[in-house]
Length: 99
Image (cartoon, rainbow, N blue to C red; front, side, top):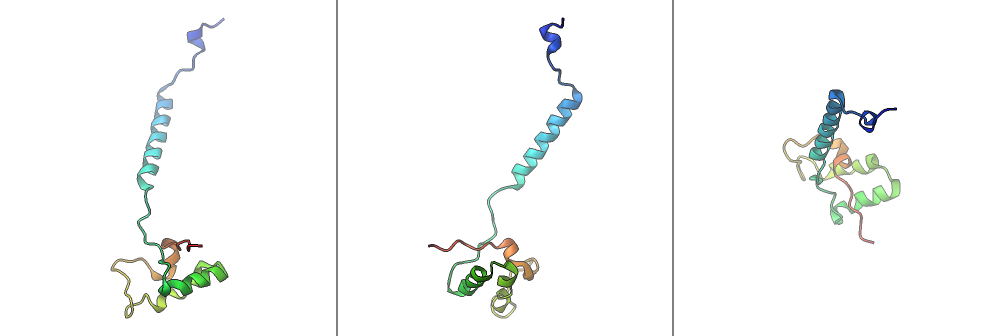
């Protein structure tokens, strides 16, 4: 019969390496997750048509078709270094309108 000490599972070097790897992955996930820094689409008169389109169609791509009418080089230019303008709602989330 084995003694109590012999029945215990031992943690070997490979186990410690696996535990360390899990720790690194968790630390990485915690570091990259945080508060959203991208502005939400304002719920105002200028963006009301976007909210109406989104409410009617439920389609982000249909809603984004109207963004360029104001967000262009002449009316309201995008900041320098802004990603391509054809995917607005990929980053900018719609606010939940007050009910």
